[in-house]
Length: 207
Ligand SMILES: Nc1ncnc2c1ncn2[C@@H]1O[C@H](COP(=O)(O)OP(=O)(O)OP(=O)(O)O)[C@@H](O)[C@H]1O
Image (cartoon, rainbow, N blue to C red; front, side, top):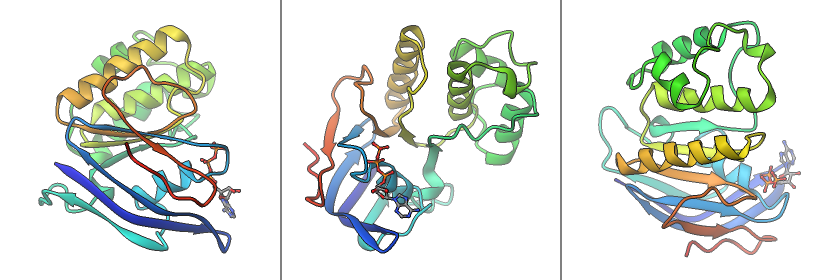
């Protein structure tokens, strides 16, 4: 599996946010997107996930299959918001996503255990602490399979132990042939990563 991005550019509010962004990521690979506030990291991730249009450039994904006909179809997107309903319990939220998304992988119980929320699944999502909410959102990545994880500041609110646990989950995803593209201001504790540094309209370089 390979994602190939060439000469990407995107606008927000009629202004060019970035241009000339190119990278390749193979299965098991990880692209860390860094750069100052406002340089377009979130915009890039949303564009890769099909949530915002690109102004220029192309993103290709191979092999295309019936299951994964496009890049957005092959992505889990974890944005700044956790994507879970306040009034449903943590378990209800995860069961919803597991049924809705297809390609079930871990059970809800297993995923909760893997993010350190075992025994808290019955609680309404709204009563969880900030870090616990982020961990519940990470569990969403585990209950169904998508080869590409798009992660925007995924460790925001996590304590050191949870960061380490999440690093293990990301490495496990890579070991299964998954791809990670993460925007972050902090090291994520991963090895063998490619860096894409976003700048002030200068384009990025994936090293
Ligand atoms: N809906 C919008 N309308 C106009 N401009 C927008 C909109 N959304 C984002 N922008 C602008 O696009 C630019 C890039 O924003 P983006 O959120 O992608 O940056 P970022 O690199 O992820 O920043 P941060 O490190 O602060 O998260 C910013 O200047 C922002 O103000």
